[in-house]
Length: 356
Ligand code: PHB
Image 1: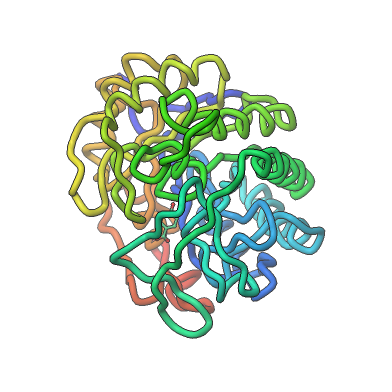
Image 2 (image 1 turned 30 degrees about the horizontal axis):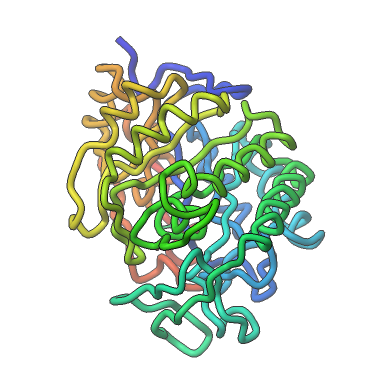
């Protein structure tokens, strides 16, 4: 029976266990989106993960959705990330970089006054964004023209090249949670006509073009993809999330990706359903589950063959040695939400490991 502690090969990478670290926005880069030495310390502490998926990172200037988030579009950022990849590798770990475009979740106060872009002029409602001037409502985005989309694809490709120069082991394309690629995917945010709107094959087109471009840099066996067909975070909704997930599971077989990483539910429990079962039925590659798993539930999903690995977010945030704790059945440190996005080491590099 396969357990959390059996090795796993996903594409070109082999991991000693199936306990992945989910990407977590922590806002510890500097104001120029350059990764810091503190980030290297944080990630190296977590090197016992089967795979670290480093936090969502801007592919292009001018598309920031979080104050102090990292980027991967200039040489200083590549050098900054090299501190992290060197530290994780020295500690025996493996690390992919999650690359994203924030789409309509970006804010003019984070981007020199520039209006955010999206598939359609529909704003996020009911939530606020952290800016240097405190929390602010999201703003109405501008709809991208079709002739601007090759520039977005080129931005992801350049970011993929930069991630290689920074020493990562691969990249995860962020196709989840209401950021640009997901906004195109789900029909509640995409009301376009033409080649990138309407039927699912059109709504998925931008994401699939990005996957092809990024795979041309890395080889698809070092490229992962994250999806969240049910998550209503960022005002996202789709009229048929299970149909969308099923279509994607079939289509993604053409890519030979390192893995597909699926958030199984909805942060706000507004959209119900089971997307993992149809994805497992139709997707032939490595499947990573995520969202609120306990160690026991993750172990059962893997033993039952429903998943190949599970990514833990807040569990890894608060427990740098999460695999060792799971193995020992040891108690877990509780995460402190007050320090999720605050600057500095507190709540970032000071969660204790066992016996420390
Ligand atoms: C968040 O920090 O709230 C966040 C960031 C990226 C995501 C989801 C949530 O994909």
